[in-house]
Image 1: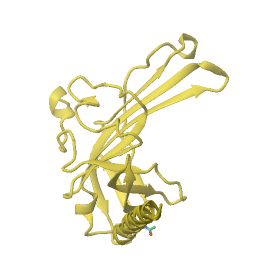
Image 2: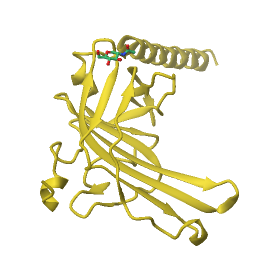
Image 3: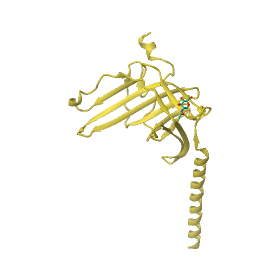
Image 4: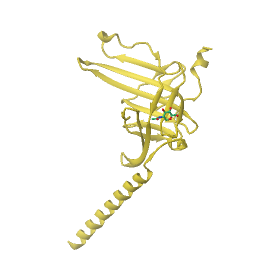
Length: 210
Ligand SMILES: *[C@@H]1O[C@H](CO)[C@@H](O)[C@H](O)[C@H]1NC(C)=O
């Protein structure tokens, strides 16, 4: 009896110690990024279960077509030398017609600047990105609208990073916060070096637009 109590106590102490060291590791590594921290930003960061990933598995620039992931989500990739890529898959039910589901696929890439005040600006390469909107209901305008050009710059006033448990494994996370305080979902680092398409202008070369 005394022995098992002792064992239980030892286990509790161990668990407490592990938790504490993880928390302090997380605290130690909490950081708000600014100019000079590009190496910490490098990688592919994906929301939720990490099924949405930038790169050729999401968007084919040659055919300008998407491969929808199994589940919705968002991914950003960054290189330490200033390039960025974005992939998003969003599914929205129509509140008036619950049987009608709209899906949105977005891909774009370009260059970024991380400033000394912590603001990050993401500049897309013009006319390279794509958006595809699909509705499951004919009356919502047919199945699939044609793919559209998409190039929308983004700006966030804060990029913070920390270590947290993700599926039981200590992993790096980032979050992007805009000037209105809207925060992106937590994005987990799933690849470093990042999984990305070529970072230069590629589409215009393929189809020969000057
Ligand atoms: C931070 O600095 C950049 C570059 O000078 C500027 O464009 C941006 O507006 C600044 N952000 C804030 C929140 O002041």
